[in-house]
Structures are given as C-alpha cells and as structure tokens.
Length: 111
Image 1: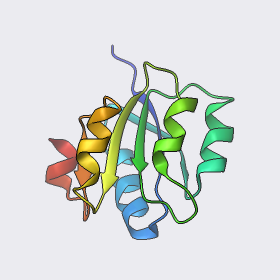
Image 2: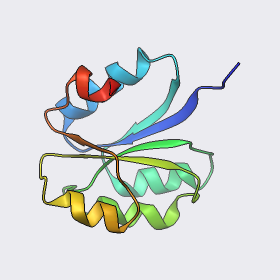
Image 3: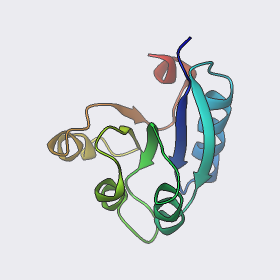
Image 4: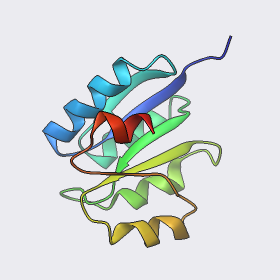
C-alpha cells in the first residue's frame, strides 16, 4: 500500500490556506502535517521533519516563497499557489511545473 505524501502548506492568505487544508485533509494520498503563514516557521519545520509535498504561495507578506526552495530536499514535490499567472514562467525556471491558480477549486486541486 502506498504511503500518503507528508505535506505542508505555506500560504499567508487565511482563506486560501483553509481551502487547501480542507482539500488535503479529505484526500487519501495526502497526510497534512502542518501549515504556515510565514516562511521562517516553514523553514524551521522542514529542518526537523521530512516533507514529500509543499503547497507554496510565492507572494508572501514579508518574503518570497521561492526562498523556501533552497531548504527543501530535492525530491520534495512543490505545487505553487498563486493569483498571479506571471509567476508561472519563473516557477518553471526552478523546475516547478505544477501551479494552482487562486481562487483554488476542488476541480483544480484534483487534476
């Protein structure tokens, strides 16, 4: 049996974070371990725990979500969450090809 993906969310928009939490908690292949609204707390967490998947907001209040990437294990999967489609080409330069455009719908999430 396949193990669920150990997942964290880094999202500073409370509504977007709550939606993602709900979707993750109801998905059998995802084990939501933690969610964060600031990058420092997320960095602290991943320095102590293995993470398989990150839902990553790029435009955070006090930082840039791309700054988290250097702290991740290269095998960690990343899905960008953004309301700004201009971010997509930059994400691709980091090797991230999975993006959820806000407002995130269940249909998007499951695709």
